[in-house]
Image (cartoon, rainbow, N blue to C red; front, side, top):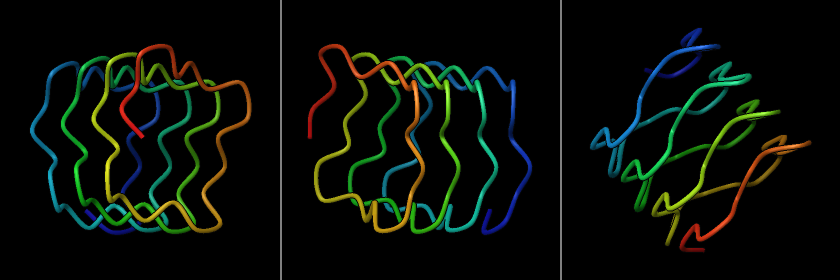
Length: 76
């Protein structure tokens, strides 16, 4: 999924643990309670995404854009 266009996608509760999402466009994606544990999110755009309750432990967030992302109860 590296470089994938996933903006406005409903990924609520999706298991994306250890997924390669580097450079992915995920603007305004709904990732509520998604499992992103250990995912590669380097350089991805998560602006305005809903990450409430998402598991982001050990995720690589280098250069990721999280402007206006909702991170309430996210595990970091």
